[in-house]
Length: 446
Image (cartoon, rainbow, N blue to C red; front, side):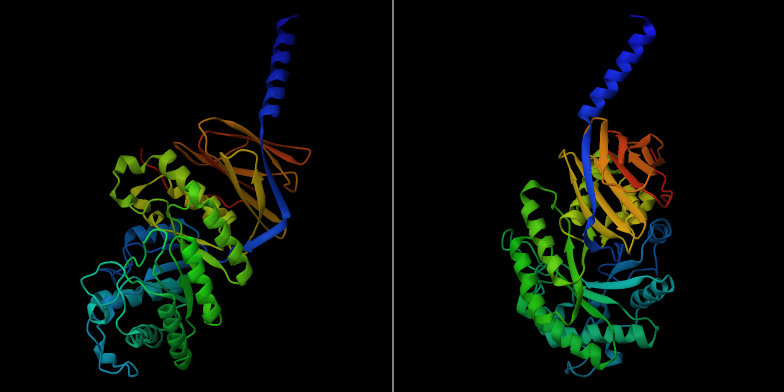
């Protein structure tokens, strides 16, 4: 056998073995699930204060680089009403609320967001000690008088509308529920189901009285079964007052949480309302890590990407709001995970059913009319040949991110008898579609 035949034989054998060993991802565009409605960011740093400026440079950079149509910002009630405005919760005394530079910045920030055509979601982290039952507590702070809280919220929304010409779309309490499984909850403010129902009903009545279009979002923390039960109980009472649900992703990718996430998603699909992952991150102590550690793509990028797939496939989110991804100036590589999803899983697209033959593979797919998109993750240390079954058309654009390579256009993809054959790098994230937007540039500094 001459050398040419040997080479051809080896090549054919290699191709045959690769084909046998190829992993499969299946997508079914006929099995449609939730619609993507809002993709946004958190304005981390403005969650407990009005801020020393209208908008930090890092957040301006993020808004410029990340395609978003909504923002989640803190409503600074603690600064807004540091002492009670008067003795009556039914009478708003405008002179009883602060007009500090920090509060002025909070309103000007809303104006700027509306000028950028962004939906505004205000979340309440805390309230001043005068309206807290035990001011010495840092967590699970219980409200002394809900009527006074309603008045304070309404006064802020009225100031935004009447003085600054800006109306807030949604409002929520940040992580108010207590999970009986862990005892965790009430990151600042803690509220029972009954208290939240009372707050939502009374404030909605006041909003409507003052022609405010703001709606509540029912907020929980981490979709534990006890929190699901609380959300279900609240929804029965206030369904005509709310625009959706908020949950956060911390620790959801742990193996023991899979059934909790699936139960949440199954229920959300019956409500007729969207659920948003209001804080999409796997590590709420990321800010403590060293600059070098923050550059670790495998640790931070891959773990965050696993959460994105879980949040959209199992929890049935209609949008997500990354937390630390609002820090592009730190050049953290997992900013690229948010860039993949925000650039390619667009509002108006509908998530569809996917499955993978290997637990190290995951895929989120969506369609809108003639356009389709997929984001596939290889969470292993090996290069993988992946066959994607069920895609439509004869062409596919591919953009990949893997260690030290971010937002790279790839051409090593083939379509054979309706299957996409894709060679995936180790620990990688690939966007595929027939009409992909380029990923905006965020340079990772090595």
